[in-house]
Image 1 (tube, one colour):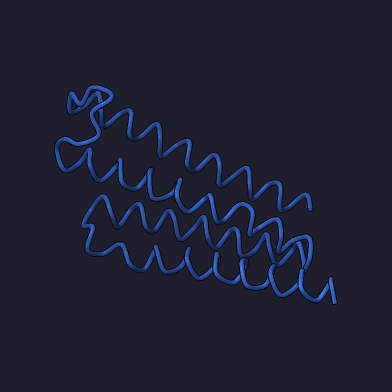
Image 2 (cartoon, one colour):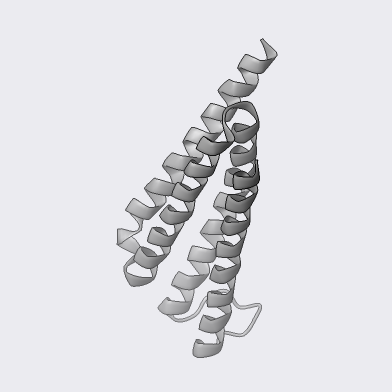
Length: 127
């Protein structure tokens, strides 16, 4: 389970870095809080961060449920895949939002496997 904790921490660190990047974009473009729209560069950084926060709400519990009921090493591997997908998503989105699909798809694939695998593992544990 140590690897799952490390991967969870890395995912949290990643979203924290994305938040810092939003703060930098705020300063660079003069977008004062609580405003959440501004120049396109700011809007893109903001959406990457927000979307990642939205995904973490699903990803983190799914990661731990899968680790507990299936296999922690596989959960950690899928977690790394999610993190890589989020990096690709960010790089694509800030350049051209229309090209964000690959990164989103990689992260979504990992999350769906974690959710379904965890659910099946929990059901099998009950029966």
